[in-house]
Image (cartoon, rainbow, N blue to C red):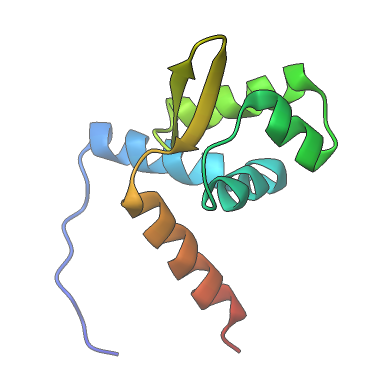
Length: 102
């Protein structure tokens, strides 16, 4: 494998990256990200799909929001959650491709 120069990240960047990967490191949150890759949903829609409570889903979404993985867009009474940007989808696809190689 060819060596690629890589700078060691500064503490602030390191903290952001670790927070991002910690958020991905939970089965429920990974499922949420996978489901949201298909389009925005409300807390209740996500809770129904994963068979969990609305408060538990809100907690998981808070962690994903803090990590910069999802954003909520208000539509009247409801907040629709979606992936922050295409980078999240790219990372999700790369992880899936990497883990299915064998």
